[in-house]
Length: 78
Image 1: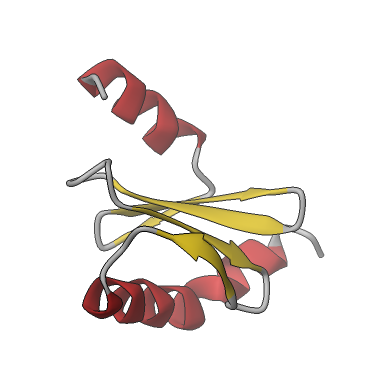
Image 2: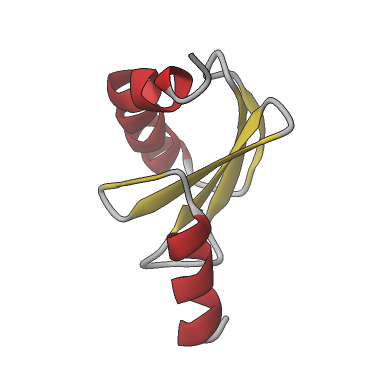
């Protein structure tokens, strides 16, 4: 993935935490590791994993970021 593509994803994301871009779309959250773009996850809004190619340690890290910051994305819907 080119630097231009990464920048576009980062700019279009709804939230960036700890190097992960969280993008809300169609009731799901796409998560991309901006430091390792081959590492991605899709979550339901409740934090349940739909699919991922992240290892279990990275999954836990992303879920901690999500749980701590999910209210910021939910607030956009209010």
